[in-house]
Length: 617
Image 1 (tube, rainbow, N blue to C red):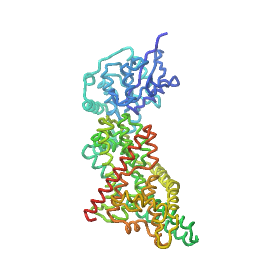
Image 2: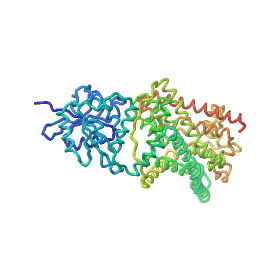
Image 3: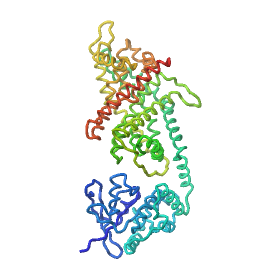
Image 4: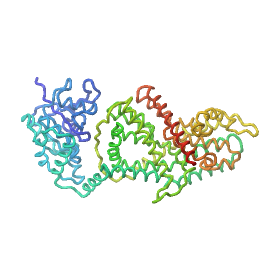
């Protein structure tokens, strides 16, 4: 019994290889792992028009034969006949995305230059037509020197023509590729060649497609792209304050109204104090920042759904390469602006282990949404709500500066790590650019509701629990006549002990007390301060005073700035530490993370405090 010949599907990720594989093999498939590596191996039986059975392999997506990941290494070894237990394919089926031709032709040239029998499946031709592209397969075939067959795998269009071309390629054997493809080109030269081939293969394009191309020429420009990105982020942080103020004031009014009702209808005593000083003053002080959270995520969702987020990663690639990372780290780091936990988990997509470790270690320096209430309440208390020119608000500018400080700190730490414990250079980075599209109002609404619900659920569980526990520690034992309740309480004794450590960086007892429960969730720092001042209030009128007013009366500006600097660098919540332990398989790197973040936070707060004092603020 003769062994069937082997053919293999190769191409970039998202070219439609798996859909074509399924269409060609049907149910005649088997799935396993390649020997010695946990990369999925899909093989199936293909029958040519002559009746000859052929084994068809669906190889992992690859951007180059110079492998940069385990998946790409498997593809290279199979194509070159170096994979143990796997015969070298006699024919390569090169699958290209017709709607993203220029990008896919870069890898196509590299494969064809091997001089092996190749057939090109110009896949998803219907999607290209939908996007306004009319392609000429004959022109592409002439440029590449191999058969080109238009296909729509999901609709099984072009399969008969593809099978006929595969059978003919198997008979013809090796053919010399045209000189334009066969010569050894650099990556840049191959990309320029791909652009020229793609342009010649386009017979017509719609106005919308030309508009998208022009947008990319501006948004991805090496000089124009970064300023546009940072301008967009600047507008986003301006909006967090400017647009959210009326809604935050309304929520604050609701909390005050509920406090008034409790004081009017519940007799004086511990139950009323728990409700007013613990729940409403503590949890309520965090809930009022829900509008800022919603506005922040509205911008992020708009960037994702419009197709701009992937372009932001591309823009950041050059900056991140300077510190030894690649744009591949940008998406996990961007996710960390929502929460460091999914950001750290998203690093699983990074192939280089040192690249991944560095990204995990700097993810907590991205300003997560839990820090936003802390920033917002301090800025509202100490930074005047005035314009600094051109409609730009001072408060939004300070918030933007805090986010930038976190990013700069992360880049510095990454630079140090990539030259010491995680030594190595920046890895290559290629990604698909999604099509521009109008964001769906329904999807945006659902996304915002989910984010708001997560925030409110945290307020109703973690923040509620920690705040009530703090209220109990602040309320007992009861203070004697003329004694300050906070100083007399258990929490006060703990805070006074910690205050000795943080006094050199400008922190007082109340600030020291807020740092402890903030390890459970960053927002708890706000509720802790609100609860502390509610318990310390001498009368009910003082309890009702907004937290911003309480802070402005009790803190100095240097103290407030030091507190902000602390939270730019302070360690993340305990859940983040637990996820880091799981993702790094041990306690070594979580402990290193805790130590270096504490040191950074202490030093940054101290420098900020003493510089502010020296400046006479």
